[in-house]
Every structure is written in structure tokens, then in C-alpha cells.
Figure 1 (cartoon, helix red, strand yellow):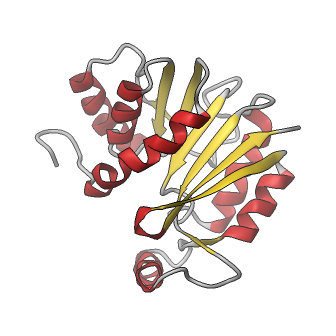
Figure 2: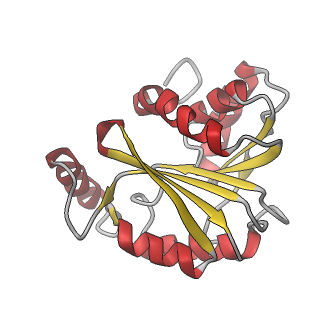
Length: 200
């Protein structure tokens, strides 16, 4: 915790590298929905660095207070109050999403939840909406590093339904939801940033 605010060192470590990619993707005025905002650190940093973007943080109920605390201390007009959102919900608290960002969520969700997440994107994303997904991925069924293998073991020890996802399986789900892969960017600490566009 940072005072009354939750704190993630990983967010501090990766926020600048992520910004360097997403600032080229979210380059038009729009509202970007962040799925799984966690502590709220990314939301504050990206809203500050991208003043042309209105940033909408979301997460499950238990994370909302922490995100709200970060938002209050940031005092940014383009950072909206956090919305409660569970990807499993049949109805999300929105009508259309012009841009979407999520970090370190797919390996926390079960695979069933990942499939529901992409199904919801098919429902809610506007045509041509950019989507950025950050996190670790396996390629051709193989870990990309020893540290990712260790991390996957840690995830599964906490929840057997979680774990690092296969890039090819994620791309297939995205394609079924009308998302075309635009970029697959290598990031620090054996992570990737996948950039999609809603094409149908």
C-alpha cells in the first residue's frame, strides 16, 4: 500500500515502456476503457501523459476503492471515476467502446473468462476501435523464458485455472471477434504488447 492507495511495483516498472507503444495507437481523441485497472496506477499515468484521451478505469468491485484513491490524488479532468466491471457480466456498463486497453489480465482470468472477454469485445467495440493487450504469452506452446515458466507455475499454484496464454489461441479468439492483429511488440521482462483493430 502507498498510504491509503494500493501499489504495484510492476506498474511502475512497465508504465513508460507501455506508454511508448500506446501513444502511437491511441493518437486520436477518444475514450479508452481499461479492463482490469488493478491499483489504478496505469490509469493515472496514461491519463496524465495522454491528455487528448479520456481514460475510463474499470475493475471488479473489490478494486474500485483503490483506483478511486489514486484518481483523487491525481486530480486529472480526463480520468473518469472507476466503473465496476466484471468481464463475465452479460451486460457491461457501456454502450460502445472506442478504444480498449488491458494489462496483465488474460493470465489471471480462467480460459473461459478469456473467451467471454473476447465475446464481449465483439459486442461492444466500435468499428475501427484500437485494442492494446499487454502481458506474457507463450508461442508455439513454449515459454519464452525461464522466468515466464516460473511465473506460470506460481499462477497455477494460486489458481489452477489461471496461467500464461498461448499467443496463437488468443489471436484465434480475437479473429472470431472481428479483431485483426496489427502489431506484436516485444516489451521488457519477457512481456508483449498486442495491438488489434476492430475490423468487422
